[in-house]
Image 1 (spheres, rainbow over the protein chains, first blue to last red):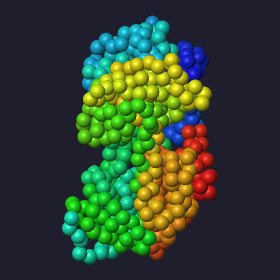
Image 2: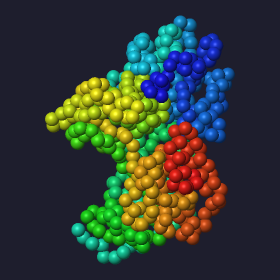
Image 3: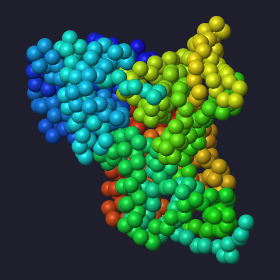
Image 4: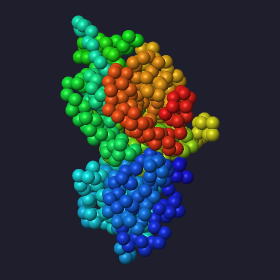
Length: 162
Length: 367
């Protein structure tokens, strides 16, 4: 299915999350690199040695949630925009995503949050728009969403054709 | 057209200043050779001039750096060598002869260069597909659209159909959206997406549906594209009558693969061989990137369609070999060659590179 549409089914997505949801009380990187490609910046950019690809850079990355701090450095270094960070905050969740469109959303703005098929599933609140030289023009958006959507929310709707 | 009065003599000439050519130039300069780089465009860099996305690969191939930034690094590396590295931009090579005479045209002036060593890094051109009205204005090759948008800042249209799900089709779709253009659909004739899944997921989550086993049947419009008709393909890749659907678009991007630009290689008398997996006619090179003409080397996409990261490594390697054959001693040559070959091995060992491996196997080259 994913080979035809680019949409990973929910079970596939869930496997990339920590098995125990409580681990997400601290922010953790969720890596959705489902097929082997020759690439390893996630591994080399991680300051905590939490992501392993290995000598053969085609291998899929493996994350050690014990070491991951959810800092988000791998998120803007991943050329495939395949990494996000998820953190649970009581009945809410904080999602950090890479964003490469202009204009950037404003802090405190309400934005439409979409799933992996591109359908709007909920409204999120922009808590922070993180930019920095090291991010090389990939912004990191911190979006607050309802906890119910942690396995579905992946990015925000981009108005196009305007 | 004016004629140059005399023949210029040069040591190493590189034709094509894309990622392969620029890396070859660096290797040659490092070894001490004088280098002349010829490119028909004003801006050097080949495809890098418009690649606004971050690269894959490892740090050695500048992974996670945007193509346009990699270009700055490669050009800066060459600046260090000053006049040892001559650049002839906006120069077309119009003839290449087996005694290594290169016929060039720059500013409407014709001149000849006699080279001791030539590296051909001419890259590739985009393929197209036949369908009714495929010559209507508004129908572009995807790479051309990328040039228009990212290099010249021209918006190609408002509503686009992308044809082809290779990495170029997927990446250009994303870049069209970044430019504020709506990508209405992406169609792929094969049963599955051919580029990296991460690129596909990236556009799918932004609302672009990817339709596999689907192709464009015809374009409709008077002065330019107004609509397209799509249809589904059966297992034998034939269009199925009755499956047609119409979309309103003003632009069609064709991204159905690239073909190596081997004309100069054929002109110089280098043997070429048709290898489908590598994109078409490719030169028969040896493991040192030398063609069947002594002192003429080839590297990058002209040897087979791959990613820019492999082109850079091939360029570096061919430059080392050409320098050695010119009589230069290269510090730590064996270790450098081995390390570069190791890089290539990893870039070509994943499932996406199966075609490349099969292609080189056919060609009889150890990679």
